[in-house]
Amino acid sequence: MSVLTKVCVVLLVVLSIMMTSATIVLVNKQENPTQRAALAEATAAAANGRAQAAQQEAIAARGDRDARILEAEARQSALRQTTDTLTSQIAGMQTQLAAAQAAQAKSEADASGAALASAGALRTVEAQQKVINDTAARLTGIEKQYTETQTRLAQQTQELDGARATIRRLREDAVAMTDQLDSLKQTAGKGAATGADPQRAGGGEPAISLRGVIKNKRTIAGSEWATISLGSSSAVTKGMQFKVIDQDRNNFLGYLTVDTVEENQAVGKLEGPGLAAVRPNTEVRTKW
Image (cartoon, rainbow, N blue to C red; front, side):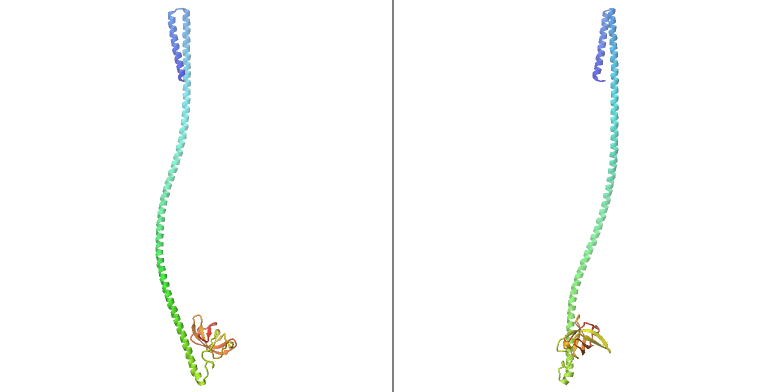
């Protein structure tokens, strides 16, 4: 019930009381039956007004109570809904918090594992770097040894080339001395008796310089014979002597003395220390 309604009810009650008092006073002063009846009716009307006012007040009170009850129930329902909503939100937040805590724990575990893995990888890298440094040091030593070996090999190669050149010159000198000795022997044995030029007689080193190759080699009656690529067309004559040379190594292998001459080839007997190395395409020369 509102304040204005309460004020109106109070005023009505006060007025009723005042009217009743005034009526009683008036009745006491006038004992007229008519007046008394009017006073009674007025008193009854006032009482009836008071009763109606009380009834209206009660109705208004009940309405106000019912309104307050409904308002309280509505507030309670709203509070219940709010509480349910907050409870649901709290549950969701708790779930999220648990998930976040689990994620944080996993992140911390992953970070710890990553740190351990990083430390292991770092140790592995350090070990590999040490191996690389050791290998580089050994490689440097090997390269130094290789350089020193190459230097010694170059020196030895130069010395070997010098020795080979010396041996070749000595062989050439030996062959030349042998040729000179053979020429002197033939000159002394034949030229002294006949007085003829030994080269024209078919012995010794020819005056012309010829070069050819061995075409084939064969053994006849225990002696080595070979066919050369030069014949009468090249001024080859019977008794002419060729030197057999290993052109790859420039080594003296022996002599070939012509026995049979044809136009483009000749056959002769082989003599010398290196006949085993004589094969087709071995070079023959009249002069060294």
